[in-house]
Amino acid sequence: MDSNADQNVRPAFDRVIQAIADYVVACQIDSDEAFATARLCLMDSIGCGLLALNFPECAKLLGPVVEGTVVPGGARVPGTRFRLDPVKAAWDIGCTVRWLDFNDTWLAAEWGHPSDNLGAILSLCDYLAQKQVAGGDQPLTMRDLLDAMIRAYEIQGVLALENSFNRVGLDHVLLVRVASAAVSARLMGGDRDQVMAAVSQAWADGGALRAYRHAPNTGSRKSWAAGDASARGVQLADITMRGEMGIPAVLSTGAWGFYDVLFSKTNADQKIKPVPERQFVFPQGASPDFGSYVMENILFKISFPAEFHGQTACEAAVRLHPQVRDRVRDIDRVVITTQESALRIISKEGPLSNAADRDHCLQYMTAVSLLFGDLTAEHYEDSFHQAHPELDRLREKFQVVEDKEYSKAYLDPRKRSIANAVQVFFSDGSATEKVEIEYPLGHRRRRKEAIPLLHTKFRRNLASRLPRDRCENILSLWTEPQRFDQLSVNEFMDRLVI
Image (cartoon, helix red, strand yellow):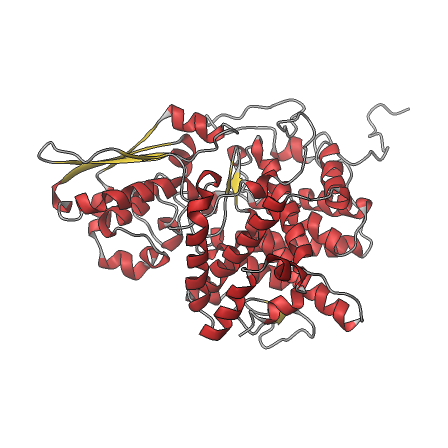
C-alpha cells in the first residue's frame, strides 16, 4: 500500500453543516416574539430598499443584465417595474436593502446584517408563489416568508456569536451566502441531504475580503456585497436542486478545507499564527444550538443610517448639538470614548473620498451630528460634504479612545451593549458634560421606545417612492398580524410594484 496516497473514503457532512440542515428542515419555530420582530424587520428592510432607489448610484446597478428583458412570472423588485429571474432579483433586492446602511444589524464576535438574506428570501418566495398559483397550488404565505427569515437570521447570527471572521480578513457576507443557501434550498423543497449539499457549496466559495470596508479602500462595494451573497445563495440552492452533489468535509478537510485555508490564522496583532485543528466554536460547545434568539435580539437602526458601532456616538452628539452649534469655532477637541470594535473598523483620519467612506467613519458621522443635530443619508453625499468644509476641520480635532468596560459589555451575552460617550472641550478651558449612551435606540432593551419610531421611519420611506393611497394600503397590513401572515407572498409583492 502506498503510504503517500490520499485515503479516498467519502466522509459524513461536517457537523456544523448537519446542524444547519437539521434546524432548517426539522425545527419548529413557535416564538410569538420572533414572528412579531420578523414583521418589523421585513417592514424596515422594505422601507430601506425603497429609500435607496432615490439614490442614482444604487439605481444604476439594478435591472436585467440584458436591458429590457422581462421574465414571465419572475420575481419583483420592490419600488420598480422589474420582473427578473430569482438570482438577479435577489441581487437587486439585497443591494437596495443594504445600500444606505440603514437596515437591521447583529453584533457579536462577528457583525453583519441578517436582513441581507431578504434578497434571497423575498425574491424566491415571490417567484415560487407565482409558480404555485399558476399550477393551481396554494402559494407560499407571508407566514412562510417570516419563518424563513427567522431561520436565516438565526444561522447567520449564531455563527457570528463567537467566531470572528473579520479577524482573519474575511467579510461577514459569507454568512449571508451560507444562510441564504440553506433557506433557499428548503424553500425549493430540498430535504436534509439537499440542504446540506447547498450549504457545503456555500462554504466552498470561501469568503470575500474586507478590503472594501476599510481605509484606504472603502467604497460602494460594501453596499452591494450582501445582495451579491444572497443571490449566490439562491444560485447554489438551484444548482443543488438540479442534482449537484455536496462537498461533505468542505470545512474540516486537512489542507484543502475552509478551516485550514481561511480560518487558521488571526491578524489581530498583525502576526500570522497557525492554529491546529481550528474549527468554529459556539456557546454550547462544538455544535450550534439554533432557535430564534437572533431575531428576538436583533438591532434596528432607527435614527441614523450609519455603521452600528457609531450609533450611540451619533445619539450622544445630537444631545450635545444645542451646546455646540454656536461655539464651533471655539472647539479645542472632541473626545469619543468607544468599544474596541468601533476603534478597529470605523475610526479613521485623512480624506474621505466617497459616501461609503463617510458612513464608515466614526469621526465624520459624529461631527455631522454635533454640527447639524441630525444625520441622514444625504449628509454622506459628495455635494453635502463639499459644501461643508468645516466638517473636515472639526474631524481633525477628534480623539478616539477605548473604554475596556465598553468592549467587555459589547461581548457580554447578558448585555450586548454598543456604548459610546462624547464630550466637547473648548479653547477657554470649559467643556460640555460627557454624554454616555450604552444601548442604542434600536436595541432590544429599548424596543418599546423604538417601535413607534420604526413605524414612522417606514411611513417616511414608503412615501419617498410610492403614492399616498398605496402607502396607506401597505401600512394597514402591519396593523393586523393574522391577516398579514395569511396573505400570499405574490399578493404582498403586488402592492410594492410601481
